[in-house]
Structures are given as structure tokens and as C-alpha cells.
Amino acid sequence: MRRLLRGLALAIGYPAAILLILATLALAARYVQARFFHEPLAPERLAEKDAYLAGIRPADPAAAPNFVVILFDDLGWGDLSSYGNRLIRTPRTDQLAAEGVRMTDFYSAAPVCTPSRAALLTGRYSIRSRTHHLVFFSDTSPAATLRRMLGLGNELIRDEVLVSEALRAAGYATGMVGKWHLGGEPGHRPNDFGFDFWYGVLWSNDMTPLHLYRNEEIEERDSRDPGTWSGTFRDADMDRGDGLDQRTLTQRYTREAVAFIERNRERPFFLFVSHTFPHVPHFASSQHAGSSAGGVYGDVVEDLDRSVGTVVDALDRLGLGERTLVIVTSDNGADYNGSPGPLRGRKASTYEGGQRVPMIARWPGRIPAGVVSDELGMNTDLFPTLLGEAGVRPPSDREIDGRDLMPVLERGAPSAHDVLFYTSTWGGTIDAVRDQRFKYRASTADFGRNKPQLWRMDADAEAHNLIALYPADAQRLAERLQAQRAALQENPRGWRGPEP
Image (cartoon, rainbow, N blue to C red; front, side, top):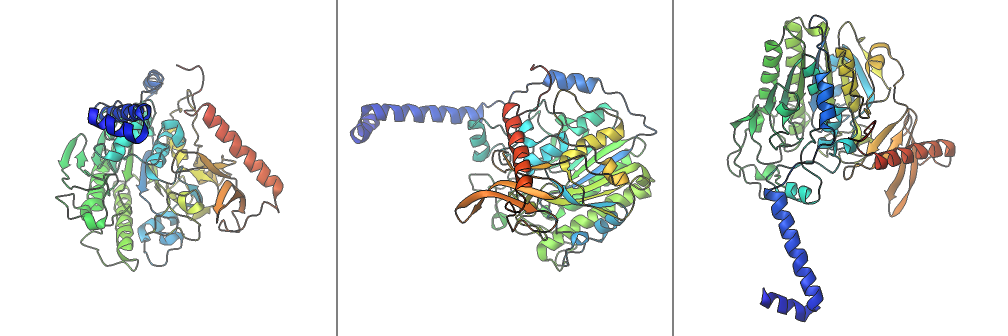
């Protein structure tokens, strides 16, 4: 240490050398704490959450509907043939659209998976659940340690109320099949957030270790070494060690989803089928590999389409179709393997291709068949929609950003959203806002020129800046954007009433 101090002193002087050594020691201590002795982010309203759940009245099992939410990972707006894809064939999902409502202007609440999934399950923008900085990483990866060193946490905070918890409190059987990506620490997994049953993986399929869980037990262990700082791998790295055979994942998830439905056919249930694909890397089933005109990606999406058909067939075979709301959507827009359709941008961006996603809803006898709706919706809407149909009031101590979708789906009513906000990948800041006709973006990098943009959503793919033509609309939306930014800065978690 003396030799090191002497050498640094000669180079930069004794005061600077001492400060540098102290800073290095502090950083090392912070690393050790974050890597080996970290604590999850402290909940602020856990008592209020517990009181809310305890006060939920049981639903009438004879009248309560069932809910099946099927979530794809990185499926683009243009990846289904019902949304215009001319290479990939998705007849079963298209049939679902023909039997229900297909929404053209439905959004994920974030352009990447962790914050979007948190928003879907809580009904709240990601900044409120502290999931708004990029994504969570596997707990043993350096990226997860870095998140914790920065004070960001790497697991969903315990005082968030999930739709699964509220429905279980109302007497529902709750099951999840597939990817979680909201934390791997004990106490922060699906069974800890209201799911009676879980079969799936904790992380994206490019992260390690990708163990396959059945509830809290590892059913199949992943021993691959990714060899990267983030704990992720690419297709070329798949031969490192023994890993989960991802070619079987969609089939396994489908089998477990059907089994859950069969086990719970006599009681109301909520099933969340959270697929791993078409996130990279891509693995098609051995049975159908090479069969799609859309290449390997098409093979993967067509496997998912067959899965949708199998789940819906199980509902109909058991006589549950007319009492089950089925929703199919995606956690964010397409990456560079999929299709955003005519939209600008892709995953991780707040252009339309990053957050506008497919959404199909089917409920025979309640939702009319063959309807195409251009009303605004967001995945935060699923929380109040499902709770409303189950007769469960949402928690009153926090802002719920979602709105009940059933009037739109059932009667074609106007959206309850007058505007929707777009949140950035890093930091969850509000980048843009849209109403039914216009989208305003506060700034857009354009070959070094950073300036506000206004687009007409009914006529353009975010190509032509129309602020000069519609200055009043630009000003109106700019004020809404600034107001939302200010509200989130003042009360980021959206608490109502006195602080605990």
C-alpha cells in the first residue's frame, strides 16, 4: 500500500492519491455489499397493501368469469397475419380476432420487458413500481450487482399490488406459466406475488442461469457459462455447458397451461401465460422447424400460434369458453428480427414500433365478433378490467394508471384515455404523449438537431413534423407531457392520502 501511495503521489500528488485510494476502497466496499449482502428496496406501503387484500370479498364462484392472459415476448405489431404479415401464418390467433375484438392502437406501457410486465400486472406506469431503469438481470450477473450499486434494485418491490394477488384474495385459482423477469430473490418470485402455481423461468431466454422452475423447486437446472458481464448470451454461445432445451419451451408451457385449466375447471381462475418467445435467441420446436415462410423467426411465432389454439381449444372442450375472457398481447414491440408493420421504430424506442403492440380479446356472448377497434388502450388497463369483471375494487391508496377496457371491447365505447404516455427505456422518463389524432414528442434527435415533433397518427408513420400546421395541438400536448413529468417527479410512486 505504501509503495502504491508513493507511486500515485509522484504521478498526481499526495492529496489526490489519498482521495483516489479512498474512493477505490469505498467503491470496493459498495460492490461487496451489493453483490453479497444486498437488501431489496424497502417497501413503503406494505401494511396498506395487506389491509387492502384482507378486505377483498370472495367472488361468487357460480358467476365469476375466468381470465386467460397470453403475453408474447417481443412480438411486433406486424408479426401476426391478422395484422398484415404476409410470410408468417397465424390462423389460430387470427381466428381469435375473428371471434372477438382486434385493437390497432393498443400499447405496452414501456418499450422493454421488465417495466412493461410490471405495468401489466399492477396497472401502473413503471416508475411507480421502481422497475423503470432498463430491465432486471439474473441475480448472479455483474449487471445485477451494478444495478444494486446504483440503488436501483433488481426485483419488484413488495408493496406493489398485482392483479394475481387481488384475484386470489377474491377466491380465484391463480396460475402463471412462463417468464417472470420481475426478480429472482426469494420473496420476489411469482408464488410470492399471488400465483398459487408457477411453471417457468425467471429471466429472458438470453440470460443465465435459465433454470426451469415448478413453483419454488428447480425442475431443470441450467449450467451454462455466458462469459459476458451482463450474464447474457447469443445464439453462438449456446454450446457452453448444459442448458435448458429451449426448443421444447413453448410446448411445455402449453401443456402446463392446459393442465392448470383442467385442474381448476370447477372454480374461477386467472391464468397468465407469459411466453419466452419470440425473444432472442430463437428456437423452433423440432416438430415444425423449417416449416414457415418467415424463416426461424416465423417458425417460432407459428409455434406460439399453435399454443394459442391449444389453450383456447381446452377452454371450449371443457365448456368454459363463454365464461372466459381471453386476451392476447405482447410485452413490447418487435426487435430487429420481427416486424413492426408500417410503424416507425422497434423495441427499446418510444416510436410507435417500440410500444404499439397487437391486442386481441375474445369472450363469446360478451364481446362482439369480428370487431376492429382503433380506440386507445394500454396494458395497464388489464388490471382494472379484470378486477372490475371479478367485482373487486382496486386499491385506493395509490394511482392506478389503467382504465377499464370493457366498455371499448363490449360496446365500442370511446376509450377512457384521452391521452397515453410513452416512457423511455432508461429512466422511465416521459418521452412522448398521444391522443386519438396526434402524437407529440418533446425532442427527437435528427442528425444533430434536437427539436419537438408533432405527428398525425391517422395519416403518417412519424415521418413529417406538423407543428407548424397544428401549433395549438402541439402546445396542448406539450403541456400534458410536462404536467405528467412534474406529477411523477413530485410523487413518483403515485401514493394517495397521507404518507405512511
